[in-house]
Length: 105
Image 1 (cartoon, one colour):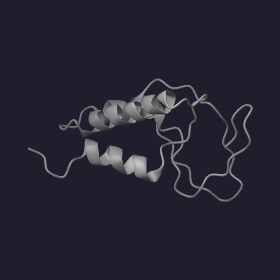
Image 2 (cartoon, rainbow, N blue to C red):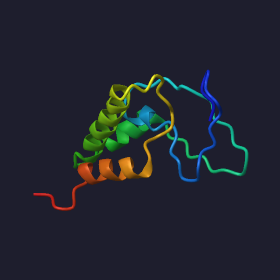
Image 3 (cartoon, rainbow, N blue to C red):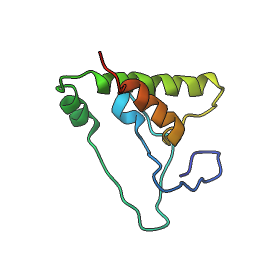
Image 4 (cartoon, rainbow, N blue to C red):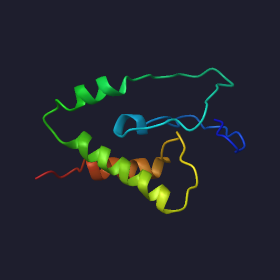
């Protein structure tokens, strides 16, 4: 993954890229190139949002809020340039836990 004025970063298996596009208005901040065999899942963000909004629960909306909060936290920490790379596994798990609680009332 390459961003302007930054050294290239090699991403580990399982890293999510470009997820912000699903939850907020987004402009991509870098370029991604595979250096080995890879899998790529492409979603049309508008179609995804249209489909997910018809679900009877608000879990996706709650996750979207969690994700945008995470993006804002990154800015608050002084991140000078946003990235297309998603949150680490721990942050992702925390967002999912808050958006999809085990004990719903």
